[in-house]
Amino acid sequence: MKGFSFISAYYPRIHYFGNHLMHFELFFKGVFLANKVYKVFDEELLVFEEKFPAFIIQKLGYSKNVNPRSWAMFVSSHFNTPQEALEYAFSIIDEFIASNPKHENNVETNLAINNFIEILVELKDYRTHYLINDFDDFEAFIKGVNVFIAQYEIIDETFFPFEPEFSDYVQRLLPMYSKSKRRRYDIILKYVYPSAGYGKEAGFKHLFRLLFSPQQQNLKKT
Amino acid sequence: MSNIVTIKNFEHLSVEARYAYTLCCLKKALEYFNLQDPDWHLVLDALWGFFDCEPMDDITPRLYLFEDLYMNRPSMPYYRVYTKVSPEPDLDLDTFNRIAKLYYFSNDTIIFLFYEAYYSFIHEELYSNRFDNSPGTLNNLQLFFDTMEKHQIPHPIVDWQILNEHTTKDSFHYAGEEKDKKSSKFLKQIRQTFK
Image (tube, rainbow over all chains, first blue to last red; front, top):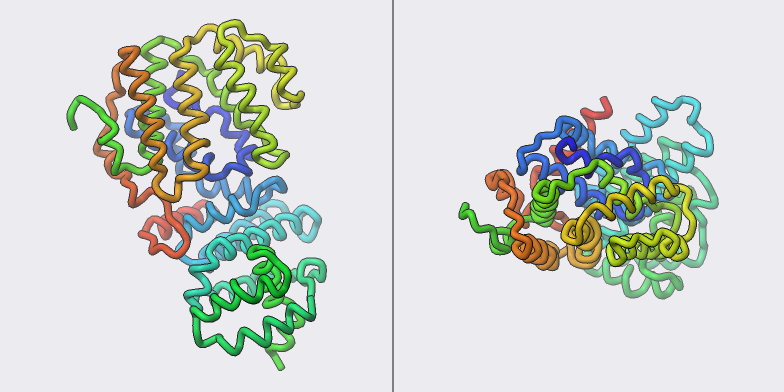
């Protein structure tokens, strides 16, 4: 038996862990630390530890089985700001497309990008309290996602459903309270979601989509 | 550091550090019983090798498998387990036989420690309590210590200096909390990897 390799010998099967990312992360962090504190210093593990963050995100980013919420929780535990997370997403997708030119503009790439969008929405939802109470950061995040969408030309009506009633409601309410962070937060939680008939998560997704929709972009320009 | 290791040594340590020590204990126990075998990773595959379903729907039969192996050792009724676990392509008969053999030639203590380290510690407590530094993991660790004491398994000799660097403050970061410099280091590491 070589060090802790008996524990980690299966890591090529990493994609199986998509739905239990937090456990997976803890497991390997424990293995890495054990490798050091028990003074085994398994070279294979030491090398893997260095690549671990990139490896896990690269693997899981393209898995259609990944649970976006798990992914978002993982990502949110590693980034100071949503923009950092977005940069991260950019770098991974760029790297993916660069290493797989044939995947450009095909179904698999779109799936990966959509996965990331879903993850970002989840990420934002997970950090709703933080983002809404820090308006600058929220704005930065929205701008970042807009860049992301523009860069990859994601203009998909099915992905950004425009719902006039919901849109109208949000547009009428939000500007009225935009100067008050706390009030803005309360509106979204107490009024927008229930009035639009959505739960918190779904409601925020729709709000998010509304903010990024081509129609909304046109409104901003005018 | 006193030679006597107690749960108090871990109250201020992160869940990662607690888990690392648990793994060291497991390795020490394997050495103590001379039961080291690379095939132990197959147990992990069998337990964690799921991916295509909703988490809890899918993990349940896996848990049955693990508990059956644990509860029914050493009789190892393969057929009974297979009647419980729906056929899965990644768990062939050869793999299952190797796991069964591993269990058969192991002992109850090791099987128990494996169960605690690889399933209970990671899954049960973290699922709900990680946001509060997983206080429940101290109970898991205590269970480990009790078992080791009962069977007179010595504690592993570890580098406490490294272990003590991993405190609860570093354990996990949450939305809205100010983070330390580790995040930037992490991002830098990622960028270098992709260059």
